[in-house]
Image (tube, rainbow, N blue to C red):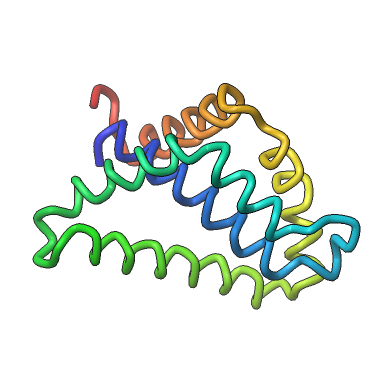
Length: 133
């Protein structure tokens, strides 16, 4: 994965995590309309999310199926992985673990979100041994 692909992956990972949290944690976070917050977050950060999707689809061009379909499969696997975390810990603990990150990300402006996902992406890139992509 290139540096840019690693950053794009983190954008999608965070977005997917927020989706699962918004669907699973409505009861533990009763004071908020989580799904509405997720949709507002998606609209606010649509450029970054769509850019990340495009970057990942481009990466998937050689995977033997059309890139959009490969991306959908990739995103489904990512969401299923997040659901497995939820199932392993249970809803109450999962929602408690995700609460701070959920609230912080929903309140993040474009600059803060981009800086956060850049940091996550660069850390993931360095873990895979990348240094100049």
